[in-house]
Length: 79
Picture 1: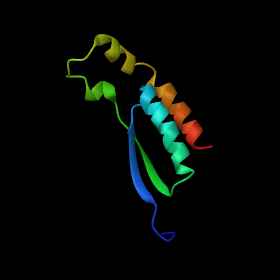
Picture 2: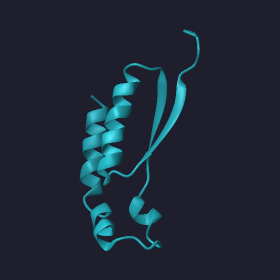
Picture 3: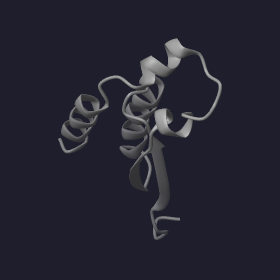
Picture 4: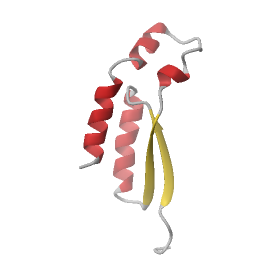
């Protein structure tokens, strides 16, 4: 229906996670073809998993450089 409202989508992502980054790029592509109202929501896998038994290598990986990635994400989505 051409008169329908945009579909609301809440996209929760951790800027340090490369899979979330790739999926966010896919979402931007989808937005070009679908009527979506995307709300970009930051989350932290580091804090979500801080009390869980996870591999220390993964724990270190998810703790690196999140601010740089957020800045790049915001720059890309505002173009």
